[in-house]
Image (cartoon, rainbow, N blue to C red; front, side):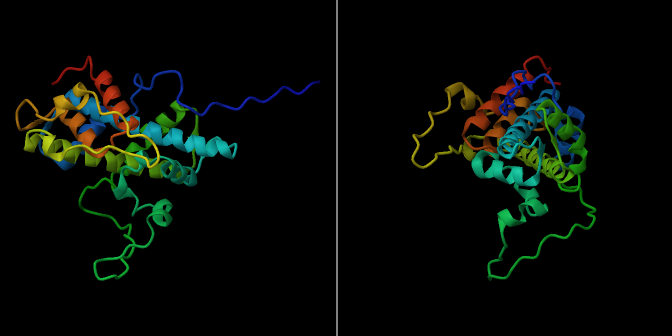
Length: 259
């Protein structure tokens, strides 16, 4: 019998939209926001934050899949995560997790203080104060759901790192959204555009993609959808990932009430 040719499995994003299946529940998102700020979080803000986190994790997983495909593997390893970040600087998010995870010790290197003394690694003892690292396990179900939606699996250490990145990224997003509310907009924080040496600079953002986020409307005790979108522009570089995160969050909240 003649052997059939083996066709490589595609490693790019699936044709089906990920927008219809958010892996991180709004109730979980609101719980993270409550640990950061006493402000009320609208329903549309929670959906927007869940969408942005999903977009970021999806891009990281797809980058890791491409790295694993080079070695003809389907199951993701921590080394695939490092390769994905090395290939795309936009994926370097959730940085507070890096010092906690063994995966990133080689990437971050030895840390020194102002006097040149080596800073010891953080101990993993329990903490009485809630933090993104302590609460990272809450994201495991969503991470595994997202992995399945991308047609892949990951070893426990990789799942742990994706948990931690999701948790710290969402915590930072919540802090920035609260800051936007307090400051009355994101104009004063500006934007960052990623420029790769030897390549032409990316075109400026469309006026309606960021301009409506610079000055906010609404009260000073409620975080709304646009506050989360403004926080997204602070957290993410000015590249394709940020544009996609903003677009998908807008689509995810199109029919969501503001309450």
